[in-house]
Image (cartoon, rainbow, N blue to C red; front, side, top):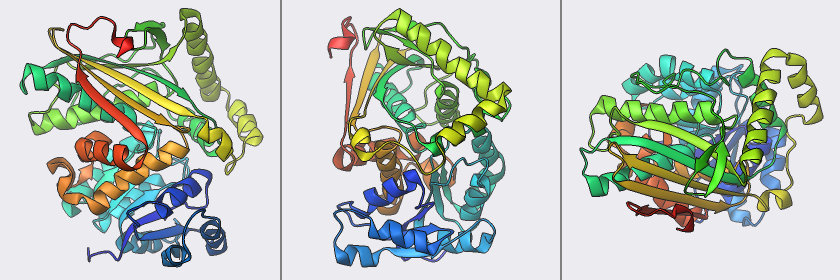
Amino acid sequence: MAKPEYDVALYGATGFTGKLIAQYLASHPQSPRIILAGRNKSKLQLVREQLRGVTKDRLEAIILMEATLDDSQSIKTLASSAKVLINAVGPYTLHGGLQVAQAVAEVGGSYLDLTGETAVYAEMVEKVDPIAKQTKAIIVPSAGFDSLPFDLTTFLAVEEVKKVAGLEAEIGTVLLGYSLKAGMSGGTLGSAVAISQGPEALRYTKPYWLSPIQGEQRLRLTLPHFVPQFNAYGANAIITPHNTRVVNRTWGLLEQAKVPVRYGTSFRYNEARVNISYLQALLSTVFLNLFALLLEYFRIIGFMAAKLLPPGQGPSLEQQLKGYLEVRTLASSRDGKIKGLVTFKTKGDPGYLKTAAFISEAALAIAFNAELLTPLAQQGGVVTPATLGALILRERLTKFAGVVIQARDVTGISDLHTI
């Protein structure tokens, strides 16, 4: 692949989340060279004109490109024109996420998306990973709210334990708790409906669906349980199965590579969205899983929901600014003696405003900091956010994206929620 002229190509720039990504990239202090791409050039022109706080020269430097799945060569041309392609066209099962990733891999480019759909991710592992390894293409699905904060903080919490216990120490459990305020868009609802149509995607099964090797963890829907780092009860959420599979892909890739930072065979991951009381956690569990069951078994529910909130609509900027995300990830050594805690805090709706920041910084890490990516990523293939480069992601998110990340040894500390 010849050296691309541009840094980032954004495919799907006219969608709700695509516009947020376009705004983030156009406003970025590093001034990345950007291509906005999609099916309709006049709509792309409108997106470019509506970018806020961007100089005239900067706007004129943003290129518009028509690209569509109906013309696979147009996707390859787009992928060859930039160091990284962000695919913001979801649901990915319905809109050719696999085909876009494969086109990028074939030309030796780099690809990121926001999918929370395990089935299409699994297809990328099966069909795109071998191509990407041959061409040294870097493919990073689920690089937004699904599942970057979960995967990244798990890696960093494990690293904190190993700083004290030694690189060869095996990890036991990782318990991740999170609190958030977020809205819903038509695209996200469409993705939830698409996910529900795939067998086992929302069910609490197959924790190693995405991993190159199998482990012994069982993925089960659990009753609310206590999350000490929040001093609150937490419950599984609709995103728990997919996040678990992504985290376990990181586990599997590290184990397979036999690198010192691997988690070990005793590693077990669990996550919970925290609520104030046991009753609230229980009600949250019942509601979310009832919704998932209705989507899976009664397709009319998904159809009606999509009509109420069609693609392209979502929370206002004012609503998004009121959102927040706080993740607290607690890792323990296998014997339970050493514990590491990582906190990840940011203001803004994690599913929209901040997911645009998450995927953009992952893309810019590839575009601007390729030498700091992990050896696994530099070899090419389908990698996770953590195996792309946890340390450079941490640096970029804290420097540019308004995320506060702190890691500390909490061995022997009982009141974890006070830290």
